[in-house]
Length: 488
Image: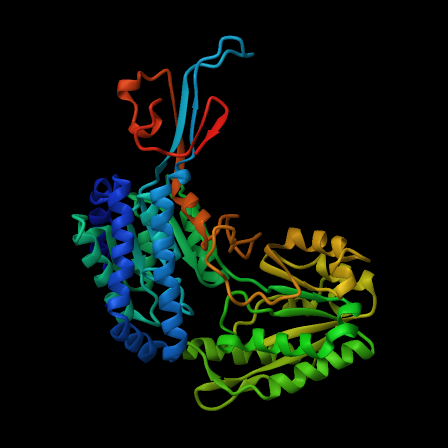
């Protein structure tokens, strides 16, 4: 299954040759919708193959496949609308300072996109996932580096996408697929690859990011690497609904055996009676959680090693000890530590690193200053959450201030809810400051398409030479900004 350098080159060149087939937006939109239809038609076979390789279960996988198909159709709608082209036309204006010539700008596809699949979402962040869907919507062919945890499923999904492409006269090479570690390295270095999307570990993502930057011609690398997803619980919120918050935290941190990129992995909870009630609720709920299977034995080994390393730190307690639930499973749990130990750099910084699996760290803070000191030391995240009392949520006390303090930490800030569950919607953002992502762009939601486009402006070009998107009479009926006026 390991692809050779020659096979990678063949896949990239086939994708590069398929670019012109994606020029027509009508064809692109139809291709995406047909891909969704064909994936749904193959649901039983795909879910069975996915479960055999990942053990995620038919219910979870069926839902994830439905999300993937919805996302493909959502991008088809975006392609039809055309606003993503960001058309702007300025006619000459000699009265401006300096004078404005005839200028017309829109966005064009970058070229072949390399997509690196994730392990924990074999449909939604894999061969037909958000990176692929958004790249194809932008007019960019893709070559996917399959994840080794689900190679057979990757082949099946790629076959479905190619079949859908052929139905619309698009060459099957528009979706390439390669396997193997070395193939992933060869892919990022290939001179015809114009951009890359990655979902995975900090170590692997950073290596590819550095390789993308070190090329003779560097390329954009949009990587999702890792996230702690901090949660801050105010004392007033704990006093108001400690049991509800504790139960909600347990459900979120153990969902999918803690293998979601937005799992809340670090919690600031108050000391005192209200905080004690919260921890008791968390303890009860986590203790009732069944052991589960991680995606592969490497992840299980890393999880167990990470727990052992963290519990060896002085003062770290484990009210419910996470660990080996059986020969192939792991049990959920959480660790507790005084927040003061995290306020300054030192050995406890390990607790501020993501531990992939069903565990979270609860840091008990004595006062607002201590909580703020710890927040100031956190790395970038996909999400940050604050739980407020009803009065704080209505604007009293430090509610507005806390929201402002969390905003620099993450791409999505939640109030009185939990980060697991990333809706596919136009306003969604799935990204954040490094190391959550290597760029500020998102891999979920409509704006994901922007990563695979670049703006081009034409100056004083005769209208007969211009692409249809930039002509005055707007033959394609595109939304645009025309001489300063927004036209729909």
